[in-house]
Length: 204
Image (cartoon, rainbow, N blue to C red; front, side):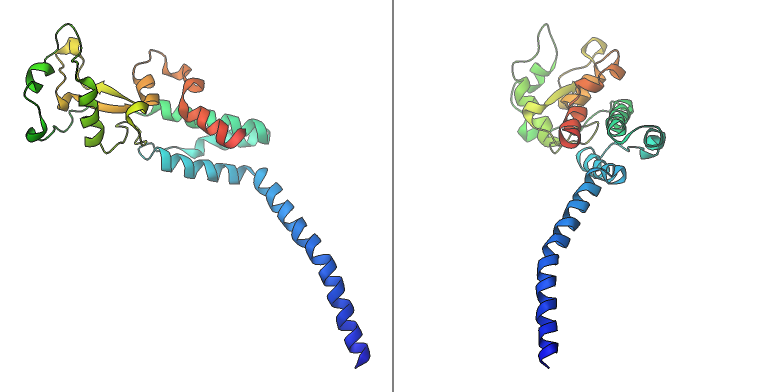
């Protein structure tokens, strides 16, 4: 009975001594595995992009060759570049938008909606109505936006007979606005918030 008790005490002491090292090793291994696993990286980027840009159908099958032919560090950057390229390539069709309820329109609305030699002095007011109408979402990519992170878009350009009526106004995030108005959007990768935000978040 005494030997049994001694054995139990000795075993308990050994376990108490070894257990902290086991837990530490397990945590370090898990941290290293997560940090250096490309599948985990792709999983995290997938969740992030689907949440931030719900209107964009990113094709992750296009990154398979990147993973096969590049080191872990290089592959991560190239994957982010590929996702940004797909964001740039997103097809966008300008469509007539919903109007604003008549009871919310002001007396001079109709007159000020017809373009002359300058933009209407109540353009910010119109922008506020448009962003609320569109539920604070970019019309192209679906990203959540604010007044200071968005731009108005004319569905029909002024030189083609467009006006400042609400049905001719849409709202875009800054990235989509840059892309829509660029002559060479494929060169914008490193100038876009989508790329730089992911670089800060995942590469550091």
